[in-house]
Amino acid sequence: MKKNIIRRSTSLESKLPDNLHPVLRRIYKNRDINDVNVLEKSLQKLLPYHALKNINQAVEILFHSLQQQEKILIIGDFDADGATSTTVAVKCLKMLGAEHVNFLVPDRFKYGYGLTPEIVHKAQQEYSPDLIVTVDNGISSIDGVEAAKSSSIKVIVTDHHLAGKSLPNADAIVNPNQPLDEFESKNLAGVGVIFYVMLALRSYLREQNWFNNQKIKEPNLGSVLDIVALGTVADVVPLDFNNRILVNQGLKRIRAGSACPGIQALIEVSNRNYKNLVASDMGFCIGPRLNAAGRLEDMAIGISCLLSENMQEARQYANQLNDLNQERRAIESQMQQEALQTLDNVLLDETDDIPSGISIYDANWHQGVIGILASRIKDKFHRPVIVFANGDDDEIKGSARSINHIHIRDVLDHIATLRPGLIKKFGGHAMAAGLTINKSDFEKLKQCFDEEVQRVTKPEYLEQVVYSDGELMQNEFSITLAELLRNAEPWGQAFPEPVFDGKFKLLQQRVVGEKHLKLVLKNQATIEGIDAIAFNAISPEDQSSPLMTGSDVQVAFKLDVNEFRGKRNLQLLVEYFEPA
View 1 (cartoon, rainbow, N blue to C red):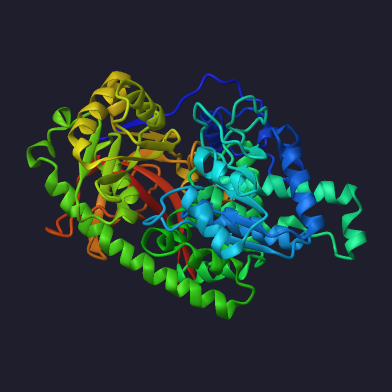
View 2: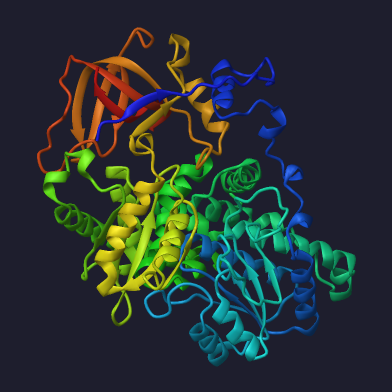
């Protein structure tokens, strides 16, 4: 699809310091930042935990469990946020003196998402817990919490997903997105929420003189920030001021060589250098390998990797995760081909005729990969998408992904209100959601979804846009600026990495790796030709470039430093190109 390159602009009056690089000043202004304090990344600037509703009750319950050395069971989720949340809970509770801590992650293919009555029954059989702590789930687990309470199991829910009309009857719920919560940042990932609970618990234990009485050293909970950073980036939550601090501090630990063995092993198997790891590496390289366990097999593999205490064990798990990720990619590729064939071929080039909301189902698709497939189709057609695969009995399970301005959970909620019984259950947030329907209701849901997306959509929402921070001057095409931008990160969701644009002459081009395009570009600002690469720009079927050598090309790009055989050169990472 053709995209519009739109240059960011703002009327904001900058209050940033004069000695800030002019390009960086422009970038921050374009992101509505005009206060240098917002750029602070020290842990001292983290929002205090006290504003989180019910956190004191949760801490008191945990303290009692530590005093009695009760059996604590962490119930996680089967994605990267769930895995990192579970790991942080287990690690921190053990550091704080808990002796009986275990974890259980529902098998997505048998039990589905969250704390269900079936999972409570399984937990009783295998662990006989006195206390269940949910991480990255639980806010919608009304029946599961009731099942636990009826069996005299205490429940603390820690979650970040949006609350429904009713809340579970847990002993304590800690969720910045629950009603009447006053915590300033609503963007914490699940791993961020449980990290805050552990910070509060440590503070309370300190007040109770717990560490002296137990003759244990007060732990540095900053040691798990590498795991917090990974979960935060992998869950694609907005990197607001608070989340940028968490991610930055985690990256600092990783770059200093202080990451846990599991993350070190995942970095190795991803062929990345820990010394210059950036947030996008977590999102596109490390996170997917961790996620692969929950998608295809058992997320316990990923959690065990993160909990590993030595590199030998961690590498074994990381290699297993890498193999699963390769399998996941092969399955996804096949599913994507089938999905595009299923969509009417006539519509592929007729953007105006593509439904506003796309729903697609195949009985043979892998339930663990439909979320990624939904993302791929969403990216290709710039439409909200639901992809369905077979669930239990006569049910099918869907994974939904959305675009900016269209809140996918609200869309599903409105459908559920208008058509009671059509959606059996659903949950999620603005950009991603999950749902279950009867297989026989797919066509009804497909029509309702399209109609509801149409209702809430303005034409401009469906336009493909690349936002640019403008052109660069001659002296700004430099390794110095590229490194400055890298050091200014973490960039990510809602705090996008800088993109620039300009008109170039295409001097050279060649296909590399069958689907990537290696370019040499030149314009008045570059004087000499400059290397560039456009990933996934070539169709594997025809291997032909859409560009003519010697022609003018409009390019949107990021600045990057390419290191090869000890040499470092400036390189442009092409986000989008079109004939000028």
